[in-house]
Image 1: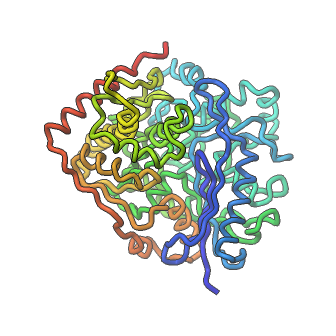
Image 2: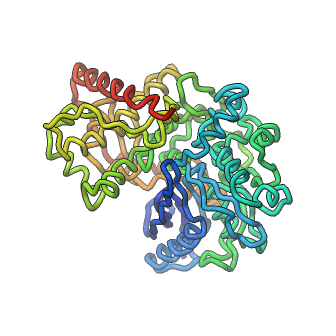
Image 3: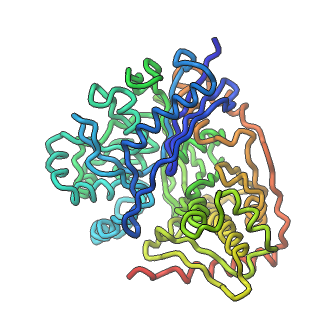
Length: 500
């Protein structure tokens, strides 16, 4: 009987299950979107129970699509939107509040309070991260401080915290009936609470956040058997043996295993990850220091990351809030109704500016408008914003690493947009390359899970699976490139100091 590995990819807007064969090919999938709950400006929540229900359902869709059962599945990998925070009662399995999404900015007052002593970088040496609303730590604090009875229940040992990988793992392995409460190093490194060097929770930092350590999951490697799926799922008795945060999973799926290799994922936001090997590199240019992966008992591999909050979600905003088009892929046709952006620039600082600026006071701005501007120009400016933000992160990476990147490996949904990818190559001045297998996030989690159970033998075997799919070559002259970059940087200045 042919065997497969299944990945559960729990993303910001949907949950997917994808089944891979030994060649790394995606054979079948299931997908369900979940509600985006936004009751106030800056608040973004998800219903964790809805996500758990969807996770079970999409597994059924994928198995049914391929007409196989659990007996054909060797292992389960989990990959997830990182930083999104859920706290639940370990006796009932019911969350005490909606999950706070990574994009949520309500915790800025907590960030400001913690930064009074030592500034926003007071924990960077330990965690690799600046104080920011992005990460899980302040989200845990907000729930503990703002939901009635939660702090007391947490101190009594009745509550558990997890990012979405932990929430799914706990539920898949039995929930209140013996569910496994674990996470991997990549997700733990996004909380602000893990010591990068010891790979353990830092009790002093947790105390500063007011978080009882007993509610935190056990930190494990990215590739080992965490637990066995329980009777509550179609995958019962199958081991869950790979966990990677989504951006690290995409890096793994791109086979960027070696120091100096990198990838850029185009999704709800954009995330550029650069492998720094076994060395912890603290950025001087606004990047994050994070875990790339750890395989079993092997030494951890670290990375620098440039995190951009709003790229694909800007296109969704044009669709949902302004009704520019019915389906997100239509943005390309609309952008191509004009020859260029007409002089308008769109800086989507909806959650402030992330890397490399880290300016929570910024808000979105559409600048350079004249009566000449139409929907096509705005659609093009929205696409170009993704490329310009990537340029800023790449400049920071080049400065930190001291080595200029000569090409950019890309993945994610927006890489299907030829107009965007060509502009990305043009504005960077280097080739942009996508792989044949574009489902790199789910593939990375499958690889980690498969390695742990011997489905794949080693990294060399996985590396041999990577094949170039498409390449975009820059064809913009340097004077035009510099003109556009200058105007973009000018546009960014218009977003700053908006929130007082």
